[in-house]
Length: 124
Image (cartoon, rainbow, N blue to C red):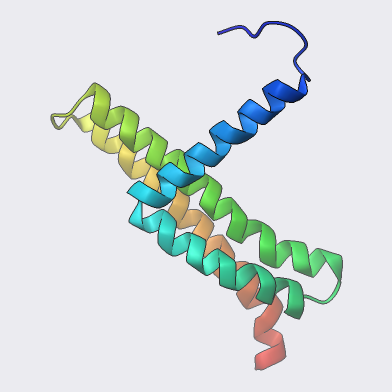
């Protein structure tokens, strides 16, 4: 739906912020995977900022962790829409859900890969 008036209006920005917070609350309230990944993020982001040597390492340790949360929310949104539109099983609905889950899995692999490549040589 098209917006009225200036798009950089502080009230519109505030509303957008509130909608985003509402989405985060919904993810926390309804998605166990999001809660687990959020708790890991609370741990891994400070650790990544502490152990990373220089800005690039810090980014390589922190960015994928936060990206997991974003994709988990998108995956949950896909699942919610699929369940709303088609509550009965359908091959395409199952495929959409599986692909969303695969996207989260690939990002988790990226997290392990980044942390392993950066911290592995220091530990072994």
